[in-house]
Image 1 (tube, one colour):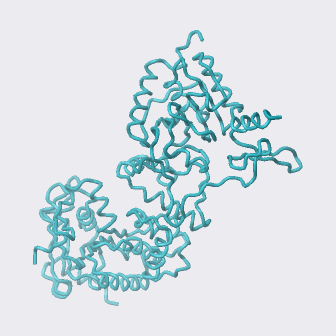
Image 2 (image 1 turned 180 degrees about the vertical axis):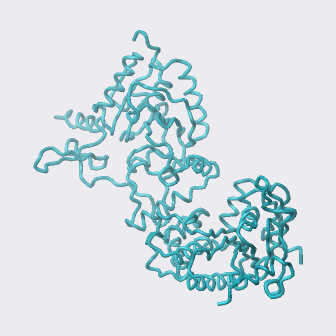
Image 3 (image 1 turned 90 degrees about the vertical axis):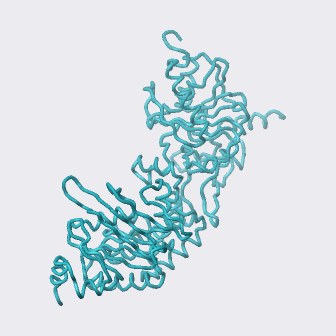
Length: 280
Length: 258
């Protein structure tokens, strides 16, 4: 596209982000400050993710963008088209074809492989923010690895509800050192963070922080010995492809209370349906 | 005798602008001993407590702490992680206002369990059991364990703070006016409780108070401070019954007889 640098951001900015990303990969789970730029979309729509994607994108890359698991929602469509226009790269909706996947709220159902990069859009990078309002104090707590406070939150949940009530953005320990917010992915996806062959990068545009989980890094969801971490999903199966193990969205279909459950990962659902139709 | 001192401070000086807060102060504390620092408002009591506990650095002088294994370290030369670890494990701090120390949005059980979790306890059942046991220890009903501190009375809050501090069995507890702001009957009950716990658990205490009655009830030894200087120090009964320094005499004489 004329008048714009490859992938929108200028080369100096991309270098700055890459330097921060290298540091983030070197210290898994540690939040690295970076000079977040104004992007042509509002804060909260993925300004962090889009900057990370722009910084790691090359002309040969194939990009997939998902929002809540779906390839066809407004945000996913516009970010995908943004890079198709500003970088002229190929895009896809197939998880296995993509080299870079920018995501909001989900990790694809299909397992990732070495060489793929998963870029998360992060609204609130600081896992302790809701418990300790002072940024200086949370930085100190990270520095000294004092994470008892997070367990106080889990203790309170078990006391009040009988179980940990965090259903998304479930805090994790990365490489047994840094407490990290996995961005608002469902707790259902947390096990996929653990020893994932793909490189996982996290970008928070408004908060101006980057962090990363290098491939095959140990990621442990916080829990108590007698209340181990458990994932939850709707007990239904997908009304389109019939999957009874994938993460489901509940969709209201009419004003009479009609509703259906469908896979939140549209690519996963579509490829299952394509397979089912083939033999016929 | 001098070799098993738990805390020894010498030559402490600290000025706030032109106001001397500590003037060449020395203090010593042995394991299991209760030391009261008394004096009027502005005499440097709380400053001394903050300096002894490492919260505030003196302009000169040093505070040495002897760990159970006999190694002696300078509190103010310690790294921040070491000092924080010490405050979480071997030491405790009881604030005058329990609202400063407690998490008001977290249940009583969570408040008591926080230090355990900070030390690495990861078993919900054990933490809860310890919390309930400590609530009983400070005479709070076990069925209040899930209530928020904001539903507690002032005296209960202070007892909750004591439970929260003692749950990790510290060797040394700093107390800043623990009975301040409580009415007399509640004070008496709290003092009784502290005295019982301290004696039974063998905890050393540095206690700051302006109330000579509190010092008489709890303390083995008393230090009297005036304008940042220690004017008199000795056994509690000795100092309070036979005060030598004119200022101490004034303090003792100004106690209202009921």
